[in-house]
Image 1 (cartoon, rainbow, N blue to C red):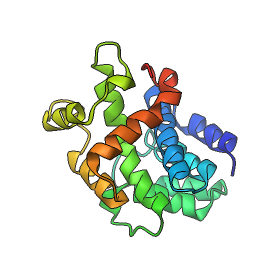
Image 2 (tube, rainbow, N blue to C red; image 1 turned 90 degrees about the vertical axis):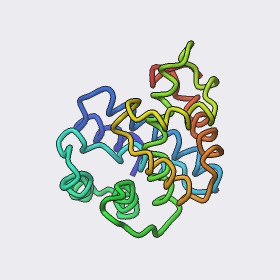
Image 3 (tube, rainbow, N blue to C red; image 1 turned 135 degrees about the vertical axis):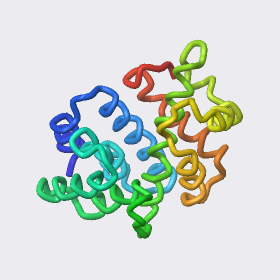
Image 4 (cartoon, helix red, strand yellow; image 1 turned 120 degrees about the horizontal axis):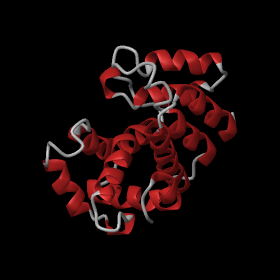
Length: 185
C-alpha cells in the first residue's frame, strides 16, 4: 500500500477538515518514530493517516475502529496496519505485537493534545511547547476535555519513553506539517 492510496481512503470517508488534519498529525509523528526506531516510515505513516478514517461514520466505541478495520480489509490494507489501528483504541484490549502497535496508541491522543496546546499559545508555535506547560494543561479537565489523560500517560509508558521526552518528540515531529495543521513550526 502507498500513501496516495491511504490518502484517497481518508478523503473518501472523512469530510471534516479536523479529521483529516488529525490524520496528517499522527502520520507525521508515526513517521518520526519509525525513523528513530529504524522501521518502515511509509507503513507507519499510513497507519497514522488511516487510524481515524472511519470516525465520522463510526463515532462510537462499539463501532470505531472495528468496523473501519473491515472496510480497510476490503480495500486490501495489510493486516499489520489494520491490527495497529485496532491497538490505538485501548477499550478493545488488544495485545501489542509490535512497536508500531505501541506507537499508534502513544501518538494518537498526544498529537491532538499538543496541537490544542499550541493553538492557545501566543504565536501558535510548536517551538513554544514545553512539557511542563502540556502537563499543566493535562490537569485542566475543561481543556481538550475529550482527550483521556490516562491515554497520554499510558501511551508514553507503553512505548517505553518518559512523558516529557514523548511530548518534546511529538512537538518536534509535527513541525514539518505545522502549516497544514494551522499552527507555526
